[in-house]
Image (cartoon, rainbow, N blue to C red; front, side, top):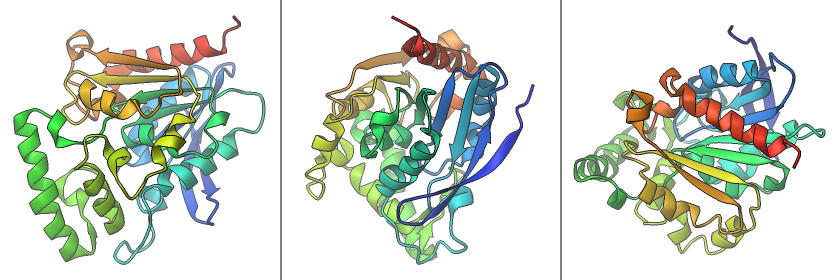
Length: 287
């Protein structure tokens, strides 16, 4: 059964309007989920997961960060923004809109969605977070072939294309949604550091902010996710030093399919979806 969805709008603290979709629970309500997506991945990519979760009794909301997908401005060239606002303003607005009663609210994060958790000023409103493909982004954690490909993209191909277009033409390369120029430059900068933006001298207070997170976390990474192998994940999640944290490795051979960095939300990974929802249910169960 495919769950019907309802278009929503969220307004961030600075007035920016964000587009989202709500998937009503198709079974007795067990909780609410917000899906925080990866960089350049539109919310529609997570629809099948949202439909699955809604069928399991979780009201689920997807949304697009500012500057991409249905939340992009009419023109990307000249659009200025701070990528950190994807967490501290955009995701924060969605969390505030959903945390309106005693129904537990959970976060499912993909890649940057796992970074965004620590940027939230309201992370205390989340009862649990299941993060897929979270990593530090540094090329040094990648196998040699992927490392060379990524460095060529960061240092040659994308700088030239972004300079020419006035925005990052990610879609031209078949990698996802186009991105504002500011997002490309910040993302590239942080990926040069072994611990992502925790190593950025321009962000000295970030580690302290992340250490304040107390929400239980599972960080699940596929062994064939070349962009976020377990070593990359471990380099980042040390920032969540105050949170109960479980690390999980997903063996693609047991799923019978390749996972990579994007396969967590394809139907072949449905066993991972069930495990995440089961974990949320265990958090809500009486002691």
